[in-house]
Length: 148
Image (cartoon, rainbow, N blue to C red; front, top):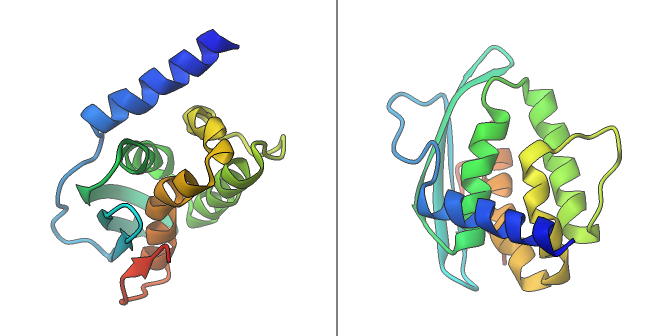
């Protein structure tokens, strides 16, 4: 079990140091900003949604390792998915972070590296900030999202 924990930590650290899909996206169809005032995480999320498919997604901002890694892995997980599939991923991810497990029919793939976050309630907000920002973008909410 310790090897699995070490692997999960390595994945999170890698996505923090080398975030995927990081940077501005010109011409997004959807966008939103989020902020976690508790630790200072800030995130801007940009999407191109064509019909019901997330064609492109990028993010900018600064934050802790958990927040940045969550945004990076989230962008990889949702690209090419239907909006309904993205919502299902959000529900499964949120359940994983708050309870430590998820329903078997929801396959989180690499997102499972965050399973240990449920033991640290203050870090749950760091990990979910990108996801709440994603929901705001898909719902085209213009006010910045805050975890407080």
